[in-house]
Image (cartoon, rainbow, N blue to C red):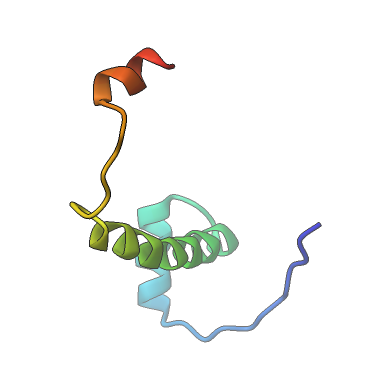
Length: 67
């Protein structure tokens, strides 16, 4: 089971209001979503660096037929 940590963060009111408006959620979920986006952005960057460098042995049609 994953453990959670309680933290205290100082954030400008304006930034928090904008983030909550954009996410449509409360403070906790807004902060969680922001942290998740930050964590996944690095993974997306690494995937983009692989573009054109990975060769697949199956065609797109074969992959679609295998669903």
